[in-house]
Image (cartoon, rainbow, N blue to C red):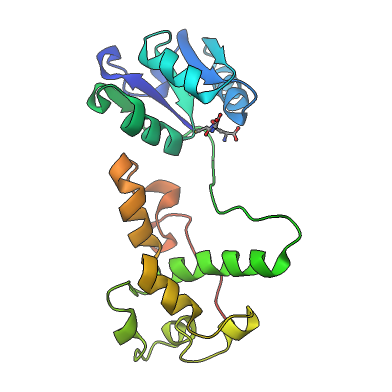
Length: 212
Ligand SMILES: N[C@@H](CCC(=O)N[C@@H](CS)C(=O)NCC(=O)O)C(=O)O
């Protein structure tokens, strides 16, 4: 979670927000994190609270509050999609909570849950190993045992999932590895690949369980 402000406000970091009016959607963890953050810093704020997303965005862009807060991914998409002029707004560098996002499946379908979970790991492993939508076919002749298992050249991961051993190769070819997905969908809205969103090999928190 983070904060977005109009550039005109000339604020560079969250600790400069003492006394600010903050637009926030009620009933969210966002609302609770906001209160925790200001209390912990010994700062005050005036909540401007809304029942739904649409109202809270509109209020912010109409100047009803100086600050908007939600998940930083949400801030980036709201700035890209809803700001009259995205360049007039800045997302402050502070991250005040972890907001991990991922696929959701119906409870109780263990087979499908496994497939979706290992698919995400497979796409992350592919990124770490440099397997892309472009080179996945050539990579099948790689001597790296991890790549061989990922692409079903060795091991039987696909069979264990109730699929065939080409399961990951097919997905990588269709949509790209995790980095390609991120570059296509997330970079364009202005959320750089940094901090916890980076691969563990680049100091981030994104890593795959071993596929075997
Ligand atoms: N992590 C928070 C934030 C959730 C949140 O604010 N989601 C917004 C976008 S960032 C949303 O899509 N809301 C849907 C809606 O209210 O229609 C929570 O789960 O409480």
